[in-house]
Length: 212
Ligand SMILES: [Zn+2]
Image (cartoon, rainbow, N blue to C red; front, side):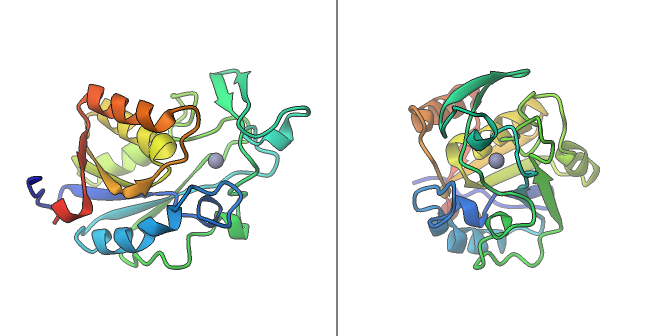
């Protein structure tokens, strides 16, 4: 049986992108993405400190296939910072698709962090945009608040959760991914690649039942 992880005052839960467009019926639906909502609501009750993130793009964002004539969703293009997968238009700022799932209920969350706000850079990680240099500001917030361990849950496991976990570790936070409170998209084997990367980096993985 997995050992229970006790949550303390230096721990923060970062809830990644629980938005309509990433749930069934949305434009970039993560299969069974909505299933994590009640799990995350209950998980969050065990944390004094919670941050919510939102993918929040301007119209015509670089990551949208529609912004590139002749390209279609899931094609990969090369941009200034390297390869970029193209997605259906999603999470356009201040649209219904960018709103949190209506059942998400974490009233004590202290910060809503928006990412992907620059038209010419995508952002999977909640810490750095895809050029790996442009900060979202979350590192500074977490350090300023004195948090040392970051728990991650949300959508999608194999993109925004994965890159957030890797960046958090690189920034010297202890990192724990609450794996059953995540769902993935699985583009070209990205689920397996994510599990392999987390394992290779020694990033902690747990389940909701083992946190509290
Ligand atoms: Zn996006």
